Amino acid sequence: MVMDKLSNSLQDALKKLVGAGRIDERTVNDVVKDIQRALLQSDVNVKMVMQLSKSIKERALDEDVPQGMNPREHVIRIVYEELMKIVGEGTDIPLKPQKIMMIGLQGSGKTTTTAKLARYFQRKGLKPAVVCADTFRPGAYQQLKTLCESLNVAFYGEEGNPDAVGIVERGLAEIDKYDVKIIDTAGRHSLESDLIDEMERIHAISSPDYKLLVLDAGIGQQASEQAKAFNDSVGISGVVISKLDGTAKGGGAMSAVAATDSSIAFIGVGETPQDLEKFEADRFISRLLGMGDLRSLMEKAEESLSEDELDVESMMKGKFTLKDMYKQLEAMNKMGPMKQIMQMLPLGGMGMKVSDEDYEVTGQKMAQYKTLMDSMTEEEMTNPRIIGSSRIKRISIGAGSNPETVRELLKYHKQMQNAMKGMRGGKFNMKKMMKKMGM
Ligand SMILES: Nc1nc2c(ncn2[C@@H]2O[C@H](COP(=O)(O)OP(=O)(O)OP(=O)(O)O)[C@@H](O)[C@H]2O)c(=O)[nH]1
Ligand SMILES: [Mg+2]
Image (cartoon, rainbow, N blue to C red; front, side, top):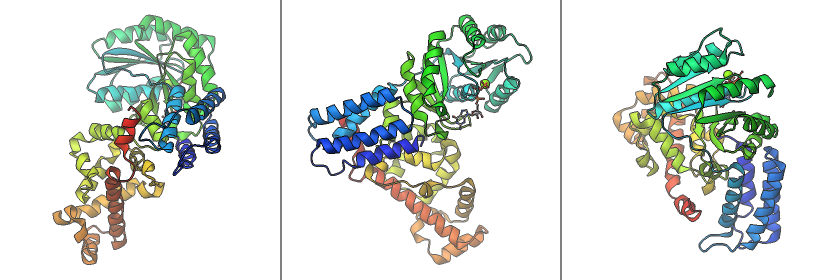
């Protein structure tokens, strides 16, 4: 998942509490020091880290461990709550007709996010349309137009016309009948006066319902200053943190939202239009702390797989046949990489470490596996246990492959099946934990 490094460090820190019968000052200091280091390394605002450390220490030692909770859970809960204070609740951009204006410095990810948002609303059944108000950068018009065409999203722009404000005015009139109107604006290297001026004029003429500031996760601590400047100019109603997939410094942008009147609405986790996640602080932090997130998975699975009849429920009950895996592989493109999906499961919380190799199936491998499964019989697909060496040979010949790859496929299936099973059993009861934490 995004912010892997931070997540791993936090989880390692919390591991120090495993089996702790009671919470003593030394352990807490130790854990807090590790958390501190982890957050600072990911560039979370220093003042906030200090404040958080202080609160965690005080609360962990002063507050009684609630009934039914072990000391570790008690501290996790406190860490969770204190992290929530830093990132905020998350801004909910409602699913209804509205105007959204994109704001941000050059290269922050506005145009990409515009396309992602259009796709997001489209998939929720709303009709999006996009206006290109970037008359500053050559190529901006073509970039957005191409993106919109690939998504089948309505687009308005006037190539070559430098009058951004006029374009927005005419564009909005043109796309009046659409539900969600998204205005992509030009970025500049820094907050120069001409950017502010243009932004304010576009703002005035379009009166957007939401002004989304796109912050590049890679900019670290500078994010605060930027967020504040934009907020002082047009006011920010939500923040999108882009490129969280490519940096360990995301903590800077995440804590920068405190400088605005809003909080994070979405995060960008890749370059393609589907790489957008609605930000929900509780889920995000659960994942960061390795408590997994079944809800997220369920939703994502529902959204992407309804057409594929992948039975997530039965998968989780451990009934995970090769047929399910076949459908899963087919659907994987839509759901994102397996690693990302597995990270949403509470395996971490159950002490199972999900290593990259376990779940990374390359596109090529996926294609190979599918070909192999195509040469299996119905019986083999539903009951893979019957596949012995003679069947392995037959299957590999039928698919023009080799027995090793068939064995590899079966091993992969086994791992997946175990992972699915593990999710409902195990010592760690996710539901109970969530409930205890008031989620
Ligand atoms: N990995 C990754 N790359 C991203 C993400 N969002 C945007 N990018 C990349 O960042 C670069 C800049 O993105 P744009 O959307 O063009 O940025 P912009 O803010 O519109 O830039 P200007 O219009 O020049 O101000 C592109 O190469 C995008 O592919 C993301 O979430 N993850
Ligand atoms: Mg752009």
